[in-house]
Image: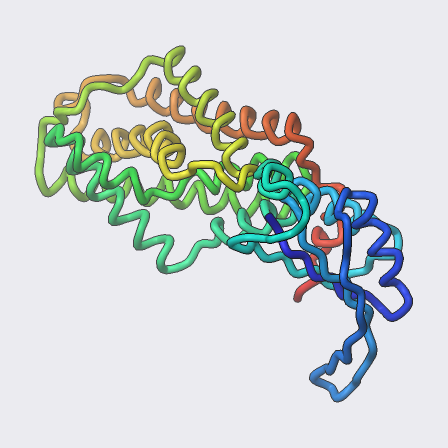
Length: 307
C-alpha cells in the first residue's frame, strides 16, 4: 500500500488526478498550498494526495514521471508506506503487494549502495568473522558474518541501473561492490596471518552448481525487492555466500599460500566473477519480467538535478 503526495504548478492538478484515475485509484484529494523558498519567494502549488494499492501506485507514479508536463524543477513526489488504508475497496485489492513503484526501488538501491564509514566497518567486521569461521570450519560464525555482509543491494543496483539506463547508479553499485570484495580479501588476509594454517573449510561449490545457485539468488532477489511482502534477509545471506566466501578464500590464499589451502586461485576467481555476473543478469531479467522500467527516471539521470 502507498500514500502518494504530488506537488505541481498551479493549474496542473487536474492532469495529475487524471493519471491517478487511469491507474485505477478511485479517488484523490486535490487542494492548493503555499510553498516558501529559502530566497523568500512564495508560490501556489496544486497538491494531489492519493492512497491506493501498491501496483496502482506504481502505475500512477511511473505515468506521472513520464508525463510531458512533469519537471523536477517545479514538481515533486512524496511516497509513504502506511500500516493500513481503510477504504471501500476490498482488502485483497488494497493490500496486493506486487509490484513496488519503480521510484521506490530506485531510491532504495541508491541509499544502500553508498560507501560510508558504516559500510566499510560493517563489511570489514563481517569479513573478519567469515574468515575466522572458514579457517576453523565454524559454520555458525561464518553465517554470522554473512548475515550483515552487504553485496546484494550492490548487485541489484548494477542490475537495475543497467535496465533503467541509470549509469550513475551502475557506477555507484560497482564501486561499492569492488570495495566490498577488496575489504573481504583484506580482512581474510589479516585473520589468516594471525591464526595461521590450515584452512579447514572446503565446501566451495563447483562452477556449474555455483551458477545454478546464483541464478536462483538473482531471480529471488529481483522478485523480493519488487514485492512489499518479500523476505529479503535470507536472500541477502544466500547472495553473500555466493559473493563473500570466495574473496575470503582468496585473502586466505594470499596470506598462507598453496600449501595450506586446497584449490586453485584462478578457478576461485573465475567462479566469483561468474557468480557476480549471473546474479546481476538474473536480477535484470526478473526486473524486466515484472515490468520494472526506468523510463520515468530519465530526469534523475541528469547530474545537475539535486546538486
